[in-house]
Image 1 (cartoon, one colour):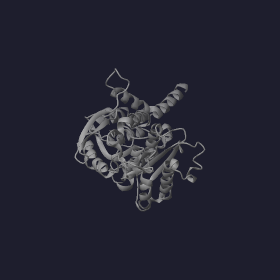
Image 2 (spheres, helix red, strand yellow; image 1 turned 45 degrees about the vertical axis):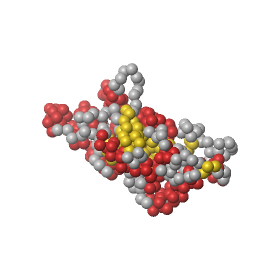
Image 3 (cartoon, helix red, strand yellow; image 1 turned 120 degrees about the vertical axis):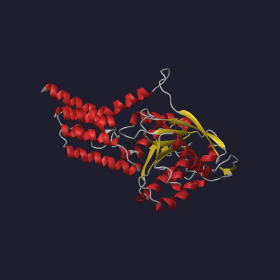
Image 4 (tube, one colour; image 1 turned 90 degrees about the vertical axis):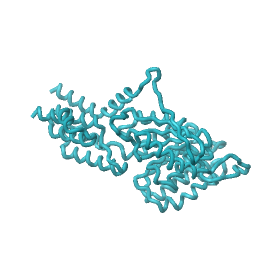
Length: 392
């Protein structure tokens, strides 16, 4: 009896930890060069006829990727990607599986002409002084992304059309512009400390009627705000910043006003989270925001009812309903068919059910795995279902 209990506890632990274990194994196999602990982002580039210049991009494929399986993945486009792609990659290493799907990361370099490309309207003065730097050409940059970059990526790399956009500062401003004026391009938006003060809050004003009238079903937005609300007055806090009217707080006030606006229009269906980081500055907020933002916009992806799978007493029909629900939920968000669980997890659940003499449950898990991952009938029966027949 004691050995039986120990085995059952081990099975439960194995189920709970399977995703983490299989993920770590895949990561270990994916590392090619033993001279380095980690290599992130392969450099690529394309010439843009719209921008009339070459644009560097950095590509990070999932560790499990294999050219032989023809699998495609959701994709994340990261502005200032040469800076922020490593952070996004680290987040995925720890959280993909149970919290978010495996994804292809596309880091877009904005090291040149950053203000020109990411700002949403043209200005000639800033803080009452002449301003001559090129700016306000966001229409060209969004056209480059939609008409040149995305087709290039989708033709060359294993990505689906389910897209997430991450931007910081002016990049965050661009992410919100994309949501407001071009919502068909991306499904999710992470705007990190966005520069909504640009041009006397031009985008904030422009957003008011659109957020009230547009529908954002199955779209998600995460916005963050750094802790330095006033650059000279530490007595300005989240509680009183909106009462200040100086230029020193317009950055924070614009962010908060946009957040209030989104929440006032919650009937439009946009899934929204806003987070304040009191200990972070504009230059440090990207790291926690990328982590929290990806978890937030993929909250719907997170696995539910794991306790039911951990319990050998859960009826087969209940487990079947849970799997079917997740299958339909993923298809609703992705707008294409996606396996409800990793193949290794379904197969492990099948083998564990076999070990506990629960053959019908085992058959169900194996059949789900075979259908979801399109295994051939002969391979499936030889490797999985055949074990059931041999034990009958």
